[in-house]
Image (tube, rainbow, N blue to C red; front, side, top):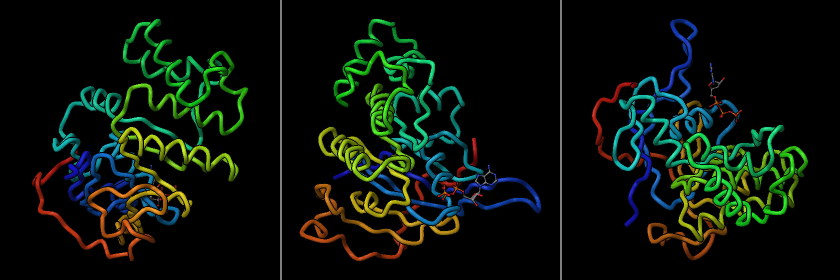
Length: 267
Ligand SMILES: Nc1ncnc2c1ncn2[C@@H]1O[C@H](COP(=O)(O)OP(=O)(O)OP(=O)(O)O)[C@@H](O)[C@H]1O
């Protein structure tokens, strides 16, 4: 049986204060299982990126709990949280966020440099990651001297350098043409399928979302619907009913688990 790698309980995010306060997330309780692929979808402004930032421990909730491997992280010290984040998560963003003054290899190995890994080990692991993404021959290029698809492959190599349990991808194909998008999607779902990596994708792209095993549909800071069944990814045991054909019918997001963590405040 799959176990949750990430859980939220009554997750609330309010931007601003007083009359200017804006409730971007309105009390979300759900789980993401280890090895799952999950798409977070919804209209612009529905709260997708806010939710991803909280799940990835890049931002703090106003109230509620985010738990990693069954342990609430909302009360840990910021230094401990950043250590957990670096060890557990990889990130791929639409905007690439590559340093133009550094080589491809230097960009890919940056997370290891931050973690204090020696240069020789950094380079060895960086080259292995680039080989995995068929980008080893570009290791010495400046990161800007690449096509969009190549840049995104460098970003994926950088995201994989720490062997993350969970890969967060925020509109990973948003800046790419159709053919290049398909290549990048194949790489992401290959990592999910062959290496058991948990994939959390924020996207407007329905085709990309349909490839995920589960879709959380957001509207006005709430998950209003949950769909299961992937159009291409192999089903897990938990998804057996949807395994034989088309994605399952949408169902309202009414499933609620018992509260495990009690009243969680922001850290
Ligand atoms: N720092 C902030 N201060 C105030 N309001 C914010 C802030 N960040 C986000 N918001 C608001 O919270 C809501 C949710 O934003 P969020 O970026 O999570 O939406 P989204 O679904 O990811 O949108 P998009 O698809 O356009 O990226 C929006 O109404 C947005 O204006």
